[in-house]
Amino acid sequence: MNFCKTKAITLKRRDYSNTSQIATFYTLDYGKVQTLAKGSKRIGKKVLGSIDLLCYSELIFIKREGSGLHVLTEWELLEDFPAFRKNLEKFYAGCYVVELVGELTEEEEKNEPLFLCILDALCGLSGTKNPTVNLLALELQMLKHLGYLPSLEECVCCDGRLLQGSDAFYSPVHRGLLCKSCSGEDGYKRLSPGALQAAKFLVSSKAAGLGRLRLSPYLCGELRGLSADYLSFALNKPMDMWKYLR
Image (cartoon, rainbow, N blue to C red; front, side, top):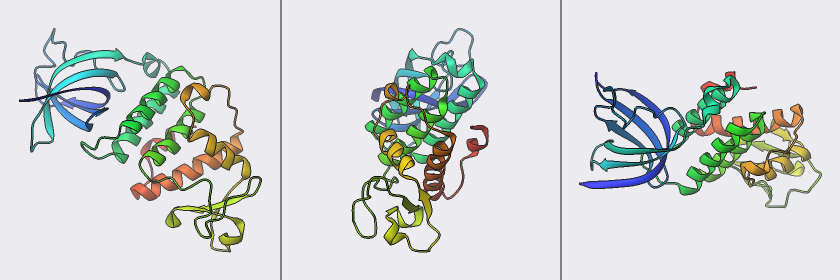
């Protein structure tokens, strides 16, 4: 039997039978996996008894080749992020993280930088008083790690460097930003110089560096529009949790 040990973030769990559950994790070493926790609903059973949405844990599972459902054998809680269960705004933010990971990742595709990015975002979201900036950073960083984020430095049309202090323009269809000269009159959306600089900062910053960043509602709106357009284009649909976020 192939025993696999890895760090993981809980994305979902659901009933499988009267005594067992299926838990979905995003893992450091194996990407997104589904595991069967046999007997986890029995009184006194510890395997899944205290696992909840967005818990960070170390787990061991038996990898079943040719099957998308593996067998969870051991689990150790490392961090349960209680703030997500005590504050409604943070709860919605956590649910949005789950939706992002669930929609943007494929089964069993390892992406270590993405895992570390998500874990860092959860740490930041659980401690911040205003989740908006942390979520904007996570959106942009996930787009980057998955190859959907356009270059924030050069015009996709002429390859010229986007000048500091000048507007940029974008369209997900063209997979990049354009300078003013190349944007023409084709209905591209505008990105102000301030929003472009903020995006460059957010896409490369750890959660610990976001605490003192203050963005105006207008800049937040521009950045949310940028990430939302590229996320919608990548998934061919809007995210369900957007209606619950500020």
